[in-house]
Image 1 (cartoon, rainbow, N blue to C red):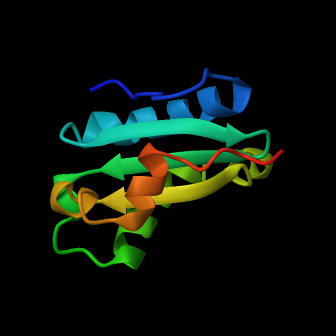
Image 2 (cartoon, rainbow, N blue to C red):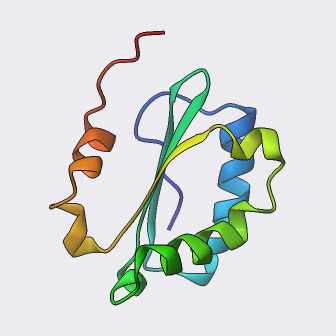
Length: 107
């Protein structure tokens, strides 16, 4: 499944994040990945993956950061939000509501 950018456009940092997460997507074909730039210094990433079921947040983070750790530090530092949810958690997560309908940036 392709990685989706639900708002805005791509840039060099987003392209690098997409490249890193493409490997995750290939190995986890049921995962749905969305990302976008919230403001000049903030990229939000959401991964909804049924394979997260039964895993605690540290386990999920470790699984995904295995891919993101390959990015340069200055690219990693732009990732301000990383939501790692199961499909069932998506409809219950307040952070997910903010991801879908973000408060406009004050920058």
